[in-house]
Length: 119
Image (cartoon, rainbow, N blue to C red; front, side, top):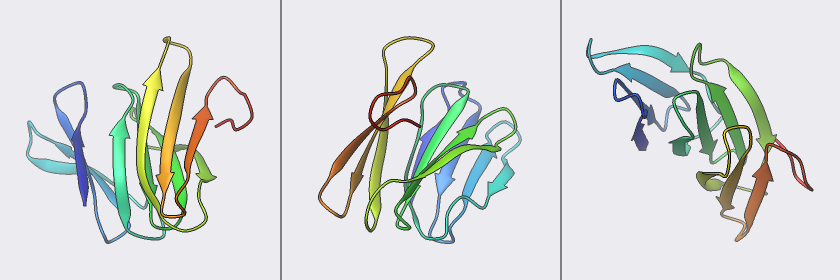
């Protein structure tokens, strides 16, 4: 139910109600990867850059994926109930923050360089 182009311009990520994320190679017009990403509907996904993909789902979690091999980097229980949206903010090449919005009416900020909630 969500999609976004990778900044490299050659791949497209799509999230679905079958609990998977598919990574499409636009040059070959086929799916290269099918990620068993979550245990519920994928509500949103975003690329931080060419190397990291973030996904979230109705199972209340958010996950980060390595875009080289699409192996999971981290999964966190983000919200009580459905996680509706995810986005990134990067202030430098070595650190970034993730914001998530939940059906529990909360926004949560997660940082890669550690504060109260780290990923």
